[in-house]
Amino acid sequence: MFPSPLGAIEQLYIGFFQTGILLTALSESIYRIALGYGLAILFGGSLGILIGVSKIADETLGTLVVALQSIPSIVWLPISLIIFAGAQTPAIIFIIVLGGTWAMTLNMRMGIKNVQPILIRAARTMGYNQKEIIWKVMIPAAIPSALTGARLAWAFGWRALIAAELIGRGGLGRTLMDARDFFNMDMVIAIMIIISVIGLIVEYLIFSRIEKRVLSRWGLSKL
Amino acid sequence: MEQVRIEHVEKTFHNKEKEKSFTVFDDINLEIRSGEFLSLLGPSGCGKSTLLNIVAGLDEATNGEVFVGDKKVLQPGSDRGVVFQEAALMPWLTVLENVSFALRKKMKKEEAKEHAKKYLKLVHLSKFIGSYPHELSGGMKQRVAIARALAMDPKILLMDEPFGALDEQTRTMLHREVQYIWEETKKTILFVTHNIREAILLSDRIVLMGTRPGGIRKVYDVNLPRPRSITSPEFVQLEEDIMSILGGEIEKVMREEMGDDFNTKKASLLYGTDRNLGDHI
Ligand SMILES: Nc1ncnc2c1ncn2[C@@H]1O[C@H](COP(=O)(O)OP(=O)(O)OP(=O)(O)O)[C@@H](O)[C@H]1O
Ligand SMILES: [Mg+2]
Image (cartoon, rainbow over all chains, first blue to last red; front, side):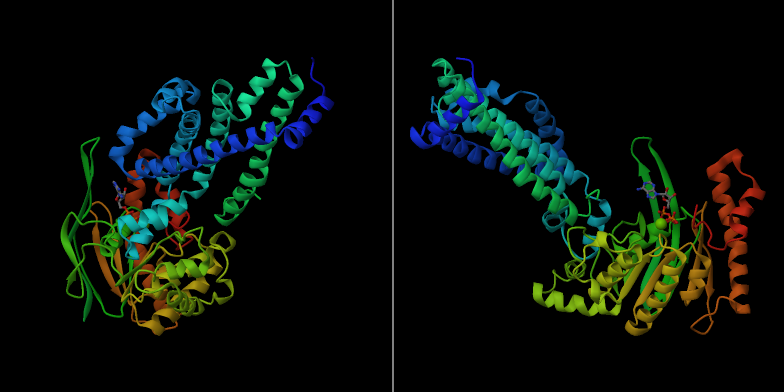
């Protein structure tokens, strides 16, 4: 019953090409993270812009966001399941959103706050009004910081998803728990491999590339 | 004909926390003629930038008003282009996009780009239209900023120490470029500097400002033929004249800032050998 590398590879093969268990689990997890992460970026980004731009919003919502960020999002699962009447997928997506949003918000806020005032003044001399300045100066200037937020949001969101699935139903997390219940440790390892491979793909194939391009274009790369 | 009228302008900064207020100047009166090249010269902290920003409409005067033509200045406008000490280019836009950024309020993208190219040619940067700001030297960035300000085709160009951060050679080159542009476009230019030589080299008139109390100390007409030679006796004479007054003003500022550490001998060394007063302070 102790797992072996060879056994894990065998389980990967069986899970993907014979029973299809892993394929189903993986697509379910990917569907959840894609939706949840997308919403987290959208909500977090908009909220970050709002509290970055408006002092009143910052003084009220700003502290709330910091408070919310300190709660591991998995803690929300019981409440989330009640809110969504036990429907697993929406409840888990909600956990992902809660996991990713705040990091995105805080980084976006910082990006907006740190825009060089001289750029805003320059835009004013060119006849741009406050609203146009937000869209054409502040948001573009905040992109590098937003990217850091997006990266963190991914890390939080991905962990939140797996944690929620370990407790809830469906996806890679549940399949891992099922495998454990059947004492199939090779399968457990196989799923852990999938989880880490996805992490690597997103980190190196997506974020690193985008970051490289953005940092060089914004003139921020350290060579 | 006057293009800009500055009437009884006062600027006081209120510090809310300390409930202290500081009046930079309380009654500035100045008229800038159409097509004139006018420099504001004075020690650090005398309010040159403050005054320029009020004319730009970026800051509000506490009292008094500024007119451009017969319109009162209430906010920034495309009749006044501004060039700051830092180029203030948007880092995520190319040189061409940065210049057309100033035109996008008035025209469509393609038209703006065509227009922008014209002005980049004027500052000799046609080769770099696709570069990003971080790929340019300081002097080149400042030329982009000048092209951007000119592209709006403002009647008035406001320049706040535009070459303050550049080395001597680049600065000399840009002096020529600015003179050329000024003669070519007939703009009215308000130019802030604390470099006496730069002021004499470029200006029709020099307004000397001082601190405590802040205000205009003296106005010099520079009636020297262009291009000017910095070694001509008239040039040197004027330099000496301005220096004698400005030296006193600077000493006042230093005494204020350094308190007991102030030492006249040391101070005279600081500005005695080099007429770029305060340049490298
Ligand atoms: N926002 C502000 N709040 C309080 N005081 C200010 C503010 N901005 C400027 N000041 C003060 O007003 C005075 C004039 O500043 P200003 O920047 O116009 O000087 P300057 O002549 O342009 O100096 P420099 O040559 O160093 O650029 C300074 O004493 C400065 O401390
Ligand atoms: Mg200044």
